[in-house]
Length: 346
Image 1 (cartoon, rainbow, N blue to C red):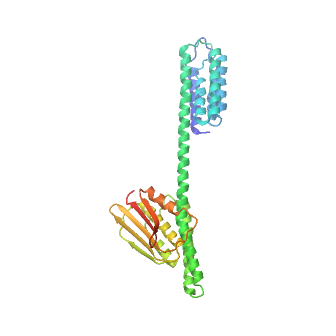
Image 2 (image 1 turned 90 degrees about the vertical axis):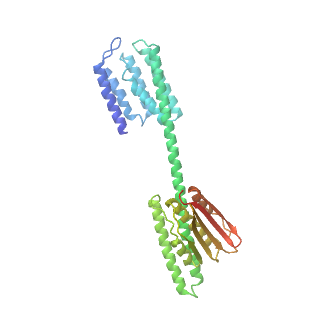
Image 3 (image 1 turned 180 degrees about the horizontal axis):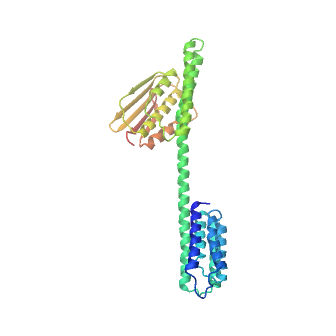
């Protein structure tokens, strides 16, 4: 039960009492008495449950209109809760409930026409039809707005889940791949170079802690704490995995959204380089040409391990598209290249 329904009901109770006391109905209608006031108050009280049980409220208020007319009272007060309940029904429920409510309301109108003591002329019928159309059309419009709002909310939630999935794939996937590479290097050199193996274990622990921290950050503050274009941590992780990486970057100025996209694209490209090649140098170049930021990741290696296609390339294309850029990825004569062209300001 909403506070607005309580205030609406209180308003109708006060209005019913005022109209009954200050504007008594003349002949041929029955003078206001306890029964007439009770019918008006009961009709207003039904509005408290109009959202919880709209069909039942329509039936109750419609029945009270007929009882009120049969008892000889004017319908000045009791008709309005019936129209409001019909509006509520059309705004909240589906087609079957609307048909039931409309039929009940029309039956109540028929009972009013048959039982009302006063003459029911063309003006009265026209007024009833206008009220009926206003209640149903306005209720349908409110229902359509609610459906559209729910659909928009569902779309935004789906985009949010998709964004979170991309963040987890790009960030945690990168960390896991680095850990796997370092574990493999440590295992191969464990007997021949135990010092390097211990360093690899230390790096695995460090990357694992970072991955846990990143996972916690993504879950808690996904939309407020975004990664920047600082690529030093990514570079250090790749080098710690035993791969040679050459970094060439100049001064780049870009918005936070573009920096985030650049960071994730580079992260995914480096992850793919580690995953699909065992040896060879990795080159990372970042430059700004006018209002455009160009990032290129090229990894050497004549033999590329072909695995089951993942989401990496699709995520890179999607991130670039969101800021108005594009990604080109494919094999070149000496390895594989990922090239992203992003606007400095999306």
